[in-house]
Image (cartoon, rainbow over all chains, first blue to last red; front, side):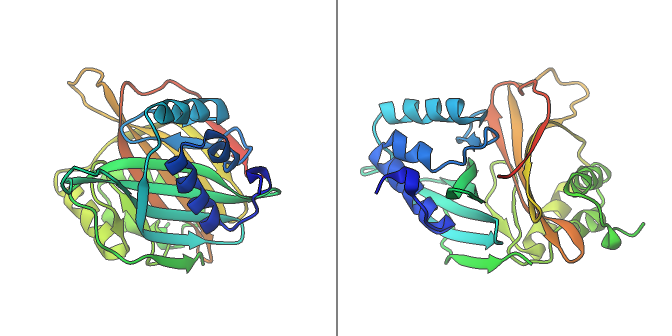
Length: 142
Length: 142
């Protein structure tokens, strides 16, 4: 299915997002973002990027070093009919590395667009300490 | 006006948030958050905090060292009738310090609740490099 016609839920867009990253698939990745030029992407320790051109260029640079395997965990989601806000932990696969004393926290915001749910904001940052071992939770915004 | 009855816009809640931080006013600060127990707060380089008790305790610890003066800039806001997502730069006041080679990026999510707009998520993280000098922009989610 061409990703341009992707019409999944916010959860499915999130799965497609991390799947595209794991495959280094720039076209599929960028098609998951809202067309709004105010889309925001913040990579860990990096300046804020706004708009398709800057965000696309950043992922292109990341994929030049190969694809990135991210396992997500401890999702906390709050959502209403127009917006879903996901907070989760990103675990990176290091084949030969011991468990690290830092982890990545991501805030992903999805909005309902005429083309379906799309990414509006991805904010990833480094946190000290080991990743928490939590179950995922979801609730509806009051 | 008691902050419990605060009924401002998302922008006004954000101003009240940074104002409460600058005054070290824990009660006013906590009253600005949604009652939802899934509220999320991420301080720079720190683990994710979920729920009122953990978030309140973290600000209490911060305020024990005095209030914190944060100047915000370069706001990019996208909003619909139920949610406002703000991306901004937090500049800290260091009276005797030269311009630093790092800055703080914050993603603040506000939701419309029966009591008015309230904070659902505050994610602040450190970015390398000097803060960008950008004008603020706002757009409506499509």
